[in-house]
Structure formats: C-alpha cells, structure tokens
Length: 135
Image 1 (cartoon, rainbow, N blue to C red):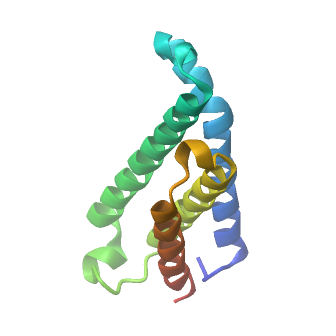
Image 2 (cartoon, rainbow, N blue to C red):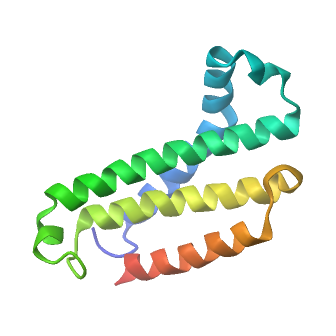
C-alpha cells in the first residue's frame, strides 16, 4: 500500500462511513434488542452509549488486528520498529477513519460527548497517523 494512495483513502473513507453507520444505526438497533433499559435512556445518554459502543468495536477490531500483525506479519517480525508493513498502514487507515468519525460526532453532539481534550487528542493522533501513512 503506497502512502496516501487511493487504497489508503478508500480504507479511511470506508472506516469513517462504517463507524458512522454503527453509531447511527447499528448500535441503537442492537442495543434496543439486547438491553431493555436502552429505550429508557435520555437522548444525551443514548448518544454517549452509542459513542462508547462504537469506541469499543473500534478498540476490538484494531487491537485484534495489531495482535495479528505482531504475531504473523513478516516485516514486523524482522524489524518491529522500522518494518514497513502494509497491514500496519491498513490498521492506521482504519483508525484514522474512526478518529475522523468520532470528531464529527463530538462536534455535532457537543453537549453529550464533546470534550476539548478529546478533540486535541484526536487531532494529535491524526497528525501522527498521517506521518505513518506518508513515510
């Protein structure tokens, strides 16, 4: 995967759209089916619930992917620090899409989940991830 290639942009965009779908459709639908108390939550509480659900899914997907890369990816086994692994860039692209999605949700639902330190964290991480994707 070349830096900021069409493939990277497609993965970032797909990740963004997938996490938006999960926040707006997937989590509310599944939460309603599995958690009886979900429907009794106030709208701001539902927003926070769905945000945490999306965050948990992101952490599981990316964390398991990192574990797979660490154990099985040959370039990483040869040079864990500087190995140029396509799968690492793919994982960073997924996370970048998630962070952009979460930023949008924070800005549109500031009263529920907005926090200036999270915004700073997200922008700092995106800056670092951009460096990974272009190096």
